[in-house]
Amino acid sequence: MDFVLLIQAILIGIFCYLGSVSSPWLMGVSGGYYVVGRPLVAGLIVGLILGDITTGIILGVAVQAAFIATISTGGTQNSEITYAAYGGIALGILTKAEPGVTVTLSVGIGALGLILHNVMMVTNSAWNKRADRAAEAGDARGIILNNAFYPQIVNFLLRVVPVALAIYFGQGFVTKALDVIPADVTQIMNVLGGLLPALGIALLMNLLIKDKFQLIFFLAGFVIIAFIVQNMIALTVIACLIAYVIYLGAGSSNHTETEDEVI
Image 1 (tube, rainbow, N blue to C red):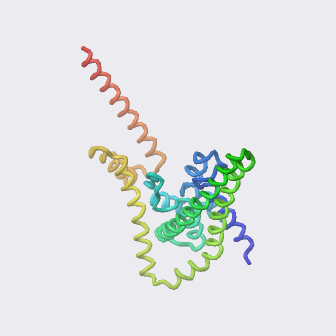
Image 2 (cartoon, rainbow, N blue to C red):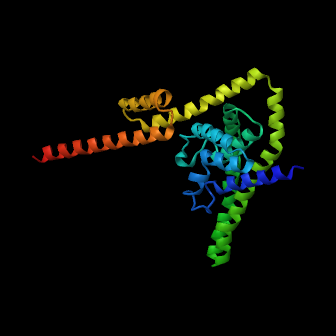
């Protein structure tokens, strides 16, 4: 038994739990789901645990782009992002998979994780009934246990155990599978997986871009990063300055229109 890998797998599973939408320990969703639960942050954490920060961040960027426009409308989800992030990125690092293949693994693990997430929600409904009965009986201890303690045990077990087992036992399975699969099929998986980040960015643009003229800024950013300034931080600073100038211009225009209406 590889005890080092087992400990690493358990640690990754714990961070998967801390980054879940139902975990309260990191300031709720503010520090958990929306920070630790993001694939980009998960890539850094998994890279630190497995000793390959560079690969972790690279894979985290790829998975983050694929899920960048994921939203939970009315509580519905098409994938569980924390399972996808920690399980997929960890297996991608351990098996030395290409980013596209890692994204494909993450999407599959996220779909399976969504089933476990729904199991947790169904299970927790039983604790709600017990909490109601405790409230009717005036049992303060029962209210606390059924609202805060027991549901977190279920959430912890349904995240740490499956993710740790998937990483510990899945490493060999995925490695053997990638070795057996023909190179052409692996290349197809890599290409198709590489399209998912593009799809995620396209979905995000569909949410953010309200007027067609705004596509000019996206195309300008693409050209600048591809041919002029190959530094994301520098481009971000330039974009912020341009956005601020446009904001000031829009404010001045609205102020002038208001004065004309008054006159």
